[in-house]
Image (cartoon, rainbow, N blue to C red; front, side, top):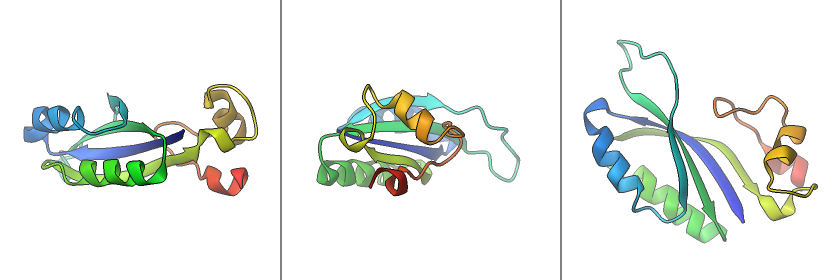
Length: 116
């Protein structure tokens, strides 16, 4: 199982469109609004998107589908791990926290270095 998390910036006028399109993307398991101050220079709204897939090809197709949604201004990867390769048991969340104690939805964690 591959867990991929990213931040996307959505144009304010297209939030509903983006949400309905995200529902169609294979592997999307969670979408949450991120609490980030909106500036006048950048009025886009930030969302946290989580994808779960069984293989890398499916994941890449899903990421491509998210990028192609009209209204998504930016996609920033936050986390990309193979849960079954983690060096500890469980659902992965506690393991991720132990390997990357600073990790939150607002920060990146490169577990590839620690897992391989």
